[in-house]
Length: 323
Ligand SMILES: Nc1ncnc2c1ncn2[C@@H]1O[C@H](COP(=O)(O)OP(=O)(O)O)[C@@H](O)[C@H]1O
Ligand SMILES: [Mg+2]
Image 1 (cartoon, rainbow, N blue to C red):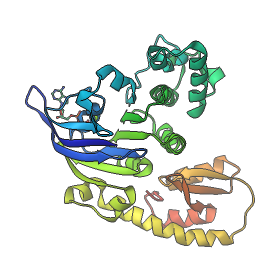
Image 2 (tube, rainbow, N blue to C red):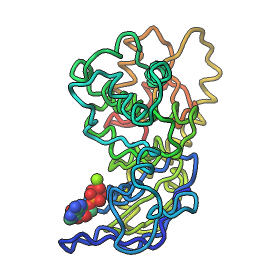
Image 3 (spheres, rainbow, N blue to C red):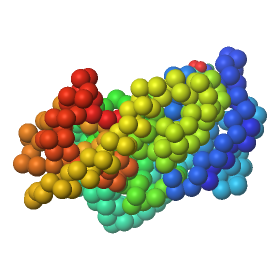
Image 4 (cartoon, protein in one colour):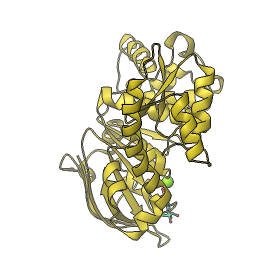
C-alpha cells in the first residue's frame, strides 16, 4: 500500500503542483490517476520513487516513509515506464531489459532466462526480438519491451506515466487489454497515469481523479459511472460517456439473452467494450469469426453478431456502439 499523507509540492518557481494530498493506493491493484494536463499527476507519481521530494507531508510504502529509504535501492525496487519509452538506442532489446538485473549483479544465465520469460510475458517472440535494436521494432513493440524492462527485477510496484499515449489507437487498445491480462497473472501494485478517461475505465481497478493538485474522487470504474462526487468529475467524465456506459451495461444483458438463442459453431473474435460499429464490422469481415465476444476488464459481457451490429448501427448514427 502506498499512502500519501498531506503531501504538498511547491516547485522553486512557486508553482504549487500538489496541495495537501492524502490518499491511499491499494496493494496488488491497478490504480489509474487521471486529470487535466498540469494537475499534478506526474509529480504525484514521481514522489513514489523519490524523483520528486515533497515540500511538506510524507509518502509511505507499506508504512515505511519513502524519505527514510535509500534512494538507489528504492528506485531499483520500483518499475517505471514512461511515455517516451526510453529504450537505449544502441543497446539490443535483451541489453535494455537486462539493465536492472545487471546492476543487481545477477549471473548471465539467470538474466538470459529472465529476458526470455519477460518477452514471452508481453507476447514478443524471444528468438526474433532479443538481439534486435529498438529502431527495428514498432512503437507498440517498443512499449512492450518498456513494460518488460520495468518488470525485470520483479518489483512489487510499477509506475506507468502515460505509457500508451504516444501509440496509435489500435496498438494502444491491444496494450491495454494485455496489461489487464498481465496484471491478472502478476498481481503487482500498478500506478498508471493517463489523461484518457476510456483508458482509465477499461484498465483500472481504482481511479483517482485529480484537479489542480488535489484529489476530487477515488472510486472503481463502476462506482464512478454510478456516482460522481463533484460537478468537475461529472464534466470530466462527460454526461455522454456516463449515459452510454449505463445504457451499454443494460443493453448487452438483454442482447446476451437474445443471442444465446441463436446457435452457432466456430470461434469468436475478442474485442474491448470500446469497439465501434465500424471496427466491429471490419473485425467480422476480416475474420472467419461469426461472433465477437465483447470484453470489459477481461470478462465477456456480451456477444455481437451481424444481426446485433445491424441493430446497433441503426440505433446509433454516430457509429459508436458502446463505451
Ligand atoms: N520541475 C518543475 N518546475 C516547476 N514547475 C513544474 C515542474 N514540474 C512540473 N511543474 C508544474 O507543476 C504542475 C504539475 O505538473 P505535472 O505533475 O507534470 O502535471 P501532469 O502530469 O498532471 O500534467 C504544472 O503546473 C507543471 O507546469
Ligand atoms: Mg504528466
